[in-house]
Length: 203
Length: 177
Image (cartoon, rainbow over all chains, first blue to last red; front, side):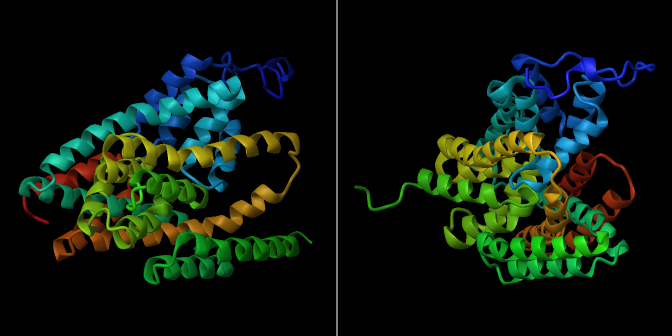
């Protein structure tokens, strides 16, 4: 058991709502993440939140947000990071592997089937037209996510953030520079300036 | 020794490295995937890239599974498995280590600074992703209108994204795009 605060430390809840369930085992972790993942059309995060916080009550909403914030600033697929951090918190390395395998395994098998079908029928005119339409939808969804993330920067009039955003867009999208090169320059600059700006605000 | 580099190793190196640089998640790494798979290695065409992106968005599971599709196109089932693990395992190991370490020294202000600093970079990367997939897909006026209509609907309503993708597919099937 690796929970930092055992359930006994939590002040006895008057309401039934904040009660948490017993920590899940390895099999439960695998099954829960497989289920969330297979339900997760257009992103697994919303399903993960519902499953972990509301359905199984393995974490409170605050704990979930905190864990997700950590996974969001780490590189790589956020939800993959979340599965590993979450699984390890309850059942160590075995839990991390179980949650990861549940998240990735079943949908990966499904996607492999789609890959085979695409390899055989991808040139069919009808499929070409359908995929062209779905591509438009997928790009539209991505644009909506970008705008949603952009609004807080615009509202805060975060000039530095906006400049960094445009610089990365130009370097990656227009100049087509390698990701590593761009990030090795942009990440230190962004962290350095943000640190100075935040210190100035709090001073 | 075979003079042609084994594509499996190429996949491991490419996606293993990309995993650690994918700031903002899989959707932010799309430009780099396109650069390497289409422009540098010529594993797939522009059109196939757009198709694979569409398929990965349509199927359930994490967005990162576009890597499975690229891996399959390069080296079959082995390629699919290897590419997926290479993209996930390095960052998963990092997440495991950092989460252990953070719980020991919890009063750090760095997570909040790093997060604030990285969000604008993720947005720039994802905007580049949208542009690159749009360029790789069909560039007709109806396609542009459909793309913007889906963006507007997804932004203003809470419609399930799956319906918007399927609507796109139906319009494509009907020959509108």
